[in-house]
Length: 251
Length: 236
Image 1 (cartoon, rainbow over the protein chains, first blue to last red):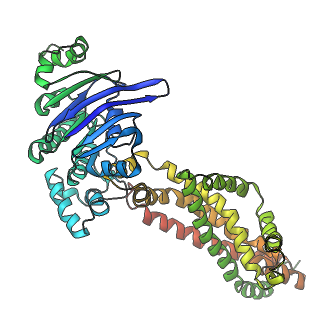
Image 2 (image 1 turned 90 degrees about the vertical axis):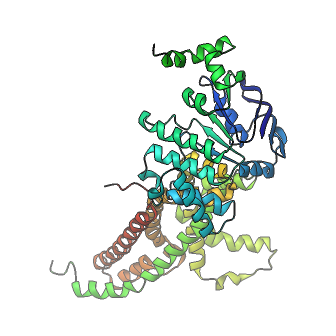
Image 3 (image 1 turned 30 degrees about the vertical axis):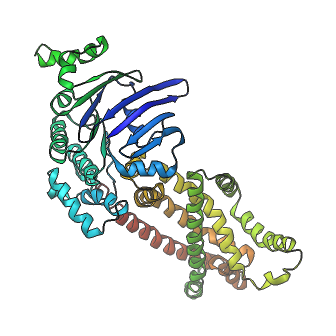
């Protein structure tokens, strides 16, 4: 279980997170949607301290971290228990696909080369890229790179995987393969996922919980299907209207 | 006009001068090695914004790049013994006479090149995509592990062409070590030419030797760069 309590963050006078509270149960998928500038990515990056929030509390199972006072050790411990999939993939450019997955296993999890290789191959297969193991990131398509990114995250057995708009940088025709991979990760691996995305259909089909954020606040949260069909807040309805119209075949 | 260039003399000089190439090379290679270590250290303390050391490093880079190499060399050669003499309260006496001027030359060239290399390393590290560091941290590596295993190998490839430039400059820069009595290639050329009162042959031979050494290292750096950019897209 991961819980955020009263997370706040400002850049100068601009308050981007105005006290976020939410709970993500173990093994569940939570999707955060919202217009750009709503603070969703900042929130996600605040969890593994790639960006440091000003105030609040992060609870990860038995770990409890006060954001304001977090020590180097706590931040490191938090990062070791989480993993992230980035919008721009961020595969290690100087490592092959297989080595990208192995890197954390060897350096952080202290597996031997052989153990790490074996495990990495398993995850390479899970994302359907066994034959690409020896390829460098520049030799892979965006979709393939992102699937390796997902395998790299999964292999670490993290308590939660943070997805930061994982399909936003992809060509439309490559979005499907990445979403499929994520769906399988959710269903087969049962890993806890927190996903910032604009893919409403993915939220509807895969997520257990949906959060709509705007202006640094959580405007509404609930079950995705219910929220899409009958949003309680006017702002949510407006944001989702384009999608609902699409679904109805009007737009 | 028949003897503007005396070929047999030129050939003889060439043979003599080859003997000084190892001195020049030794100066260049050892200065480059120490300057790289120094440059890396300076870049690292500035990058991690380590208090005091970071500011000192920045100060060094500014001063180091502002002074002519010859001045640095003179300051080290004449100033350092004096400084130590004063600091030790007169206990360290003329012991410096026994230290080879080569040591001062390497020290001076190291200080000079180190400042440039620190800047080269800094820009190289900054040119590595920020996401690489973030990805490494997100996996759970420490910032040192992330830096050493992910950022540095990528920065090295970016730095190599500039390091090659710096090293080629350094090879030729070693010629000023003659000013503090080091008998290297250029120094030997000066001596031989004035002894024989023939200049053109000697300096042509010297130029050819510098050129040969430079071209070898230029190729070596190119090969190293190709080898280290194995992960990059093949470019034509």
